[in-house]
Length: 221
DNA sequence: GCGACAG
DNA sequence: ATCTTGTCGC
Image (cartoon, rainbow, N blue to C red; front, side, top):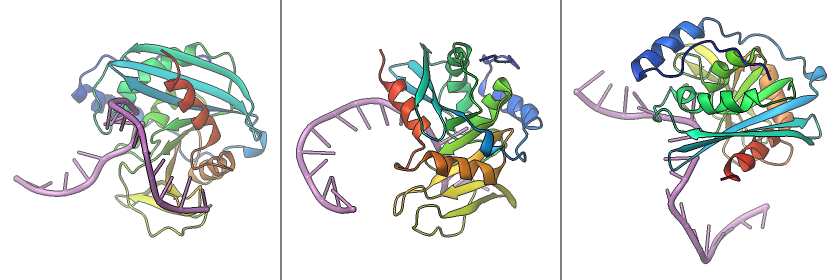
């Protein structure tokens, strides 16, 4: 997968926020995904163990989720965990993994936020700029924004709103289970992102591609 | 100043 | 995210 190097990763915490403010203007988060044309979906995940970051990208067919390619990458964890700056911690090792990817997925699913971020540029949005491909953020917990009470039934969803702006959606993929925080990363929009994630999670709370990537990221030394 | 805070 | 066994529930 061709990746475009849009800036240096080696920056201070202060500089990282400046980089985000500049890049946020380039994010496209109002473009519907052509769901009928989706054939390959990639799941992206990073696990951090003992100062080492391990990334995995798993490409699966859609809508049957057959694994067609798995790539991994390993490197020293380069940046501390700072809420709002996750991409500077996980981005470097992901760039390495993306460079090894031969397939060209129609869309990438990330473990984390897209536009549902204080500066509207979570890891899914940020990496979408490097990939120049549609990306979606799938968070397990809230970073920012608020939402109205959510019905318990699978498929229920409510807008996620921050400072008067709708930045994503809180979505129930399993009845009675904690919801997911979905937001477009880049080259996608909220309605189609929610629809794709729901279609990718027919059996478990987490979308299938991310489950596969999570297993692959934590399974190699 | 106080509270919130992806993975 | 990670440290960690058994255990409650569908």
